[in-house]
Amino acid sequence: MSSTAEAPTASDTFQNTGDRDILVRAARGEVVERTPVWLMRQAGRYMAAFREYSDKYPFRQRSETPEMATALSLQCHRAYGMDGIIMFSDILTPLPSLGIEFDVVKGTGPVISTKIRTEEDVAALKDNVDFDATVPFIREILNTLSKEAEEANTSLIGFVGAPFTLAAYTIEGKSSKACLETKKLMMADERGDNKAMSMFLDRLANMIGDYACHQIECGAQVIQVFESWAHQLSPKLFEEYAKPAAQKAIRIIKEKHPDVPVIYFANGGSSYLELQRDMGCDMIAVDWAVDMAQARKILGPDIPISGNLDPTILFGTKEQIEQAVRDCIDKAGGPGKHLLNLGHGVMQGTPEEAVGWLVDECKRYRGKDSS
Image: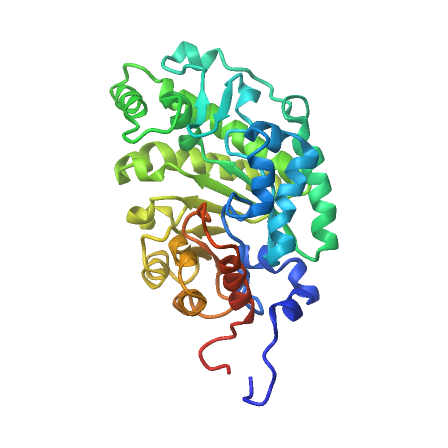
């Protein structure tokens, strides 16, 4: 760009016809015209408009009522113009399809009442899942969001939890610091005393793969697989349990929908990033605990990458946020060479204008040599 040329604004960029699928193309590994951006938990409590719902209605009512879920999905995109709309939902949402009951308790988080400890417990789970019967709101939400995304010239992102994360949540019954009951079951499985863990992971992999396909058939153009509890795993346990199950779920998706990109995100898994090169997905998202240049080096030049700003940067100044965006893009290979995101979700209390600064700078930045 010459010094006399006027730099494009975010609003100018937002109107480009290529913006409709720039995120999809980047997730497939294509080099695109600029770095696209979306944020995990972009629909969240940092927004006053979101809190008007969350302060009044319980989580499952919000996420399972199509009108509410649609409104909450669209708020942030309308405010900041990310390159994708992500459905407001939860990774636990499909669990009742297997007969696993849960609730989300304000101040506590998810609480799961169904107990999984034995092979018999796993065998008792439901078969032949029909998502239109068990989670009928998903089709309505995604159908509506698909139309909204087309009208807004942007992409629609679906998501699922990875098998290990959903297994651990279920076994522990709630959030856990040590994940002890889950690890006891993995050790029992390794000894051959109780194969409940392997059986459960296999059931979850099948369900999650099918659930992601259902989302795609309802309008999702990209799927992100969240291994939210990767920080609970040693490299050995990841390789023996979480990885094969996630690979199976991803394989189910890719066999049925080969052209739909799948992103895999192991939160806390950057310490064994080298084990994620062969997940079978189209893109690896990395957490904020690894330098983007190092992550790119570990994964190699041929594996598309997403990430990985520290979410706390959004509490900094406009200049600090913009510099962090530029540094991340440069370390990932330059504009158009990766998909910008945070290395975790937007935190509650994040200043709303900070999200706008991040998105605008990502859309504006054309590299070190531009002016």
